[in-house]
Amino acid sequence: MPMRFFIYAAKLYEKYIAGSDYYQYSSVLQTAPRPKCICFYNGTANQPERKILRLSEAFGGEGDIEVVVTMLNINYGKNKALMEACKPLNEYSWLVDAIRKYQKELGNIEFAVDRAIGEMPEDFLIKRFLLLNKAEVKGMFLTEYDQNKVLEQERRDSIKYGIAKGLERGMKQANERVAVDMLKDNYPLMAITKISQLSEDAIRKIADKIGVTLA
Image (tube, rainbow, N blue to C red; front, side, top):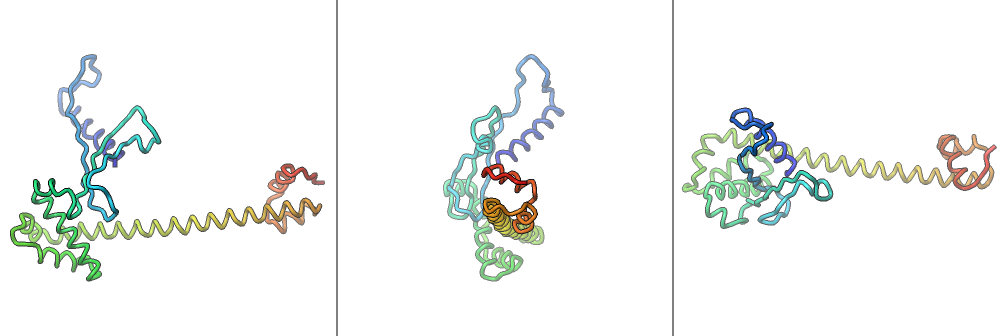
């Protein structure tokens, strides 16, 4: 998120410079709008109510560029003071929580959206807007649902890739052990390459490492 804010800010400042009398090559200090980086979190992972994210965490330590983002958890029941101060945000948080609950129960995101909006209290400020724009609301949550499926598939693919790479490393190590044993027993190079499935160059390197002379 800090990297995204860094990119967003750069683009916004470019627009600000282009549309104002800000002169970036001036020898006199030029004033600019002060940034405040805040993101609302409503994902499903367990997160604290408030968290500070720093771009330097991606560097593994302090760098010459820093971006600080305040992440606020807006899942239903979190940050009560903020929710009380902003009623529409609290209502949106309720909506997301209800949709997630009904999606698990009904197994269909469109039905879940319909039911959540239908059961939303009449005094909610955002209800009229949601009813007028129900198709767009469904589209937004369908997109989020599809992204979750993509992320889950990527996670599964990464696990499969990790297993495959692990098996590959294991086979290579086993073949190297076979080559070592055959070299110590003075098998000919051609036989070792055929059985160990290693290249001649790899076998010669192993031979040099263990101090065996090949003809």
